[in-house]
Image 1 (cartoon, one colour):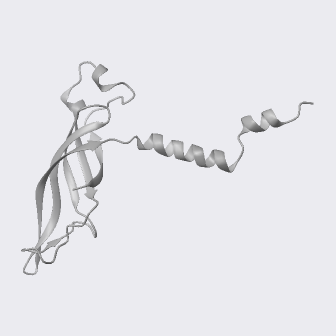
Image 2 (cartoon, rainbow, N blue to C red; image 1 turned 120 degrees about the horizontal axis):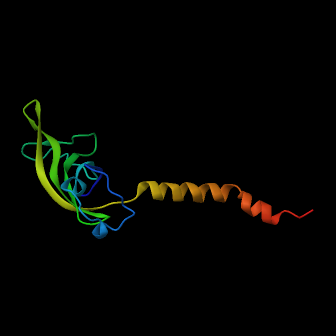
Image 3 (tube, rainbow, N blue to C red; image 1 turned 90 degrees about the horizontal axis):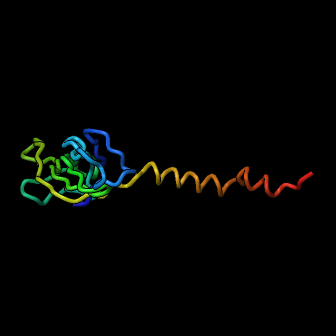
Length: 134
């Protein structure tokens, strides 16, 4: 089941250094807490018992992740949703396991902002080289 989430690492790790070159890694550098939400709805009125999403249109994902490299993690945990029994909603879950790929959001956002701002206004460097010399 596809999901989008974030991992909170238990210890700092410099992602600019290749993972295999980091010596004396602790277990805290390998593990992290994963939180996310599914990209598909689990709501199903025809199921027995019927299911409802944790959020309005998706379920909640929690788990632990184990870092395999700078960008790849093995993740295991639970997907949380509600099942309806009579007039009650009972929180329940099912296990999930998967591989996740990190995206350096800060890098992509700064590249995006840089591309937008450079296309809107000429840079000072370009203006200085195009200006006539006295």
